[in-house]
Amino acid sequence: MRSALFFGLLFLFISCGKKVSSNQEFSLKYGKSVFVTLSNGDQLKITFDKSEESRCAPNVQCIWEGFANVVLSINQEEDSLGLLQSPHPSSVSHGNFEIKLLELNYPSDEDFGKQEKAKITLKVVE
Image (cartoon, rainbow, N blue to C red; front, side):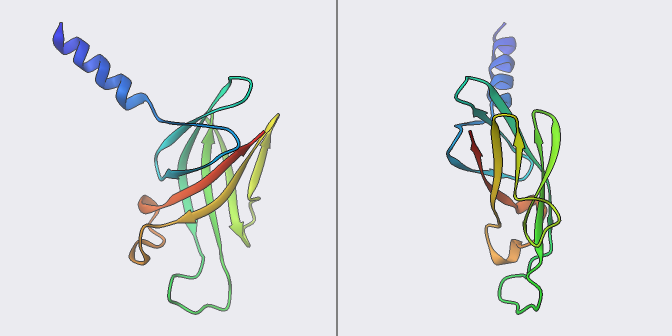
């Protein structure tokens, strides 16, 4: 009985992602999910699925600014967003809300371009 309760609570803890409200900026690490509560009470599940980096690395001089792309799952539907000279827009609209990609960062210069170290900043605007 105790083990069933323990595993049930463990599953609940693991399945609960970070929770935020709309109209506020939040960060999301690669492979992680966040639940955004909209003003009407609906929830969006946003997962950071993939990143593509072609911006100039830190401490390197480049002639081309480059671009950054990310792929998000929004309630299990895929969307691509981009920064700088990306072929993808920096925001996408879904009905009564818009998701904006504000940044794609890494914890250190040595981690630059490593997808598993990527962290994005988003904002869901209603």
